[in-house]
Image (cartoon, rainbow, N blue to C red; front, side, top):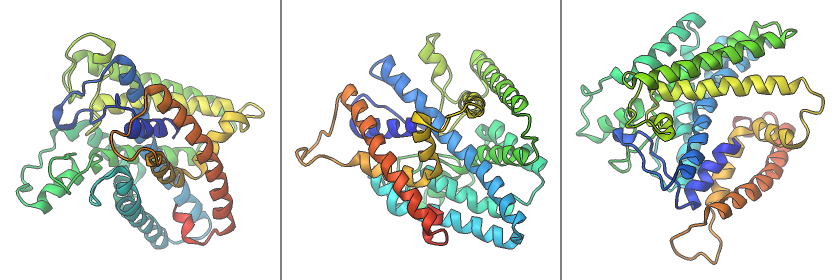
Length: 357
């Protein structure tokens, strides 16, 4: 979440920021390697959010079942959560980006995936795992030409399903549900695995996550080495940037292998740090406070960082790289206090609409 905040404050203020990796098959040109790395490290954000959304969904579903909730009630609750997310995307997220209300971003994507999961979750875990892997591996072969894009409805449907685009306002989007629903499906399967895991042996889980991370990154290396299948934007040279540049819109296999591999190492690190006394103090405590109210943090940070000082009356609204970094850190400090306050308010009103944010 901290990296996500950097990505957005950089997008709002840093003139050297670039994005749209892989959009329309294009390779983004960065001013220098530093700007590339500062963008590249934020690639972990969306895949981890969507993966953990699936994990959280599995855990919360199990919790509701254990308290006596019926499957129909749980499905309705998940459906409502999805609708709320889409409404927040339309009325809060899109205006923050200055995008069309129909912009299909990460919140809309998660919301629609939740709606699908309100019934899709009833499939056996093995079936969800198999379908998720197939979606991630085979989605580049998906051909939507049978959906006519000459009319707005067909064009927008293709944007939502698999073809991110900013070519036709207001029917824009960067996070199609294919293959992202596959990533959420993997997260769901991971959540069901955690429900049956023997938590008296966290060392084994840490080792498994490290092994999974190593395996995924090894697969990424092989995919990039052969430079064919799994690379929507193939390497054009042998520099480090050539190797690391992968398609995010839509995410190709190389992108997903790299980011989920890194996520596995981060989860292992988090579990290892949890074993230490005082883990929840200091910087780790600040980060955990963001994680307890993730949607509030996401929506709040967008509007906080996009605000322009009164003396900036006209474009360009820009800061140099160092000033952008200072603004990022100052903003995180303020957002931390806001998240603590919001968490207290939300806890005091557990049955209010705040439970959806």
